[in-house]
Image 1 (tube, one colour):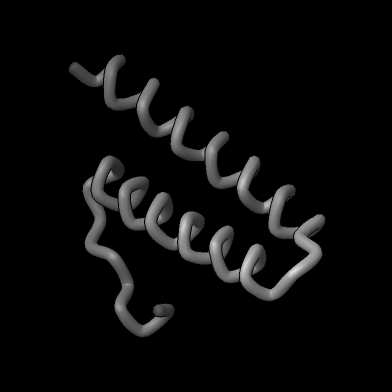
Image 2 (cartoon, helix red, strand yellow):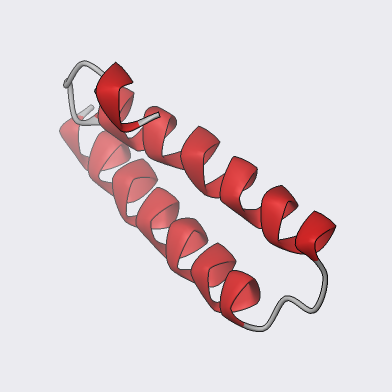
Length: 59
């Protein structure tokens, strides 16, 4: 089970990095907001996978 969780964690980290690259190249504010929202959602998922509690003060 740990191997599956590790795989999901690595995948989630890669997704976040991909969205950060897209965010850096975003041309419009709506694009930037879309990628920020997706990054936040993926970070919450990653925190859940790692067993942590999402930090609400960062939102």
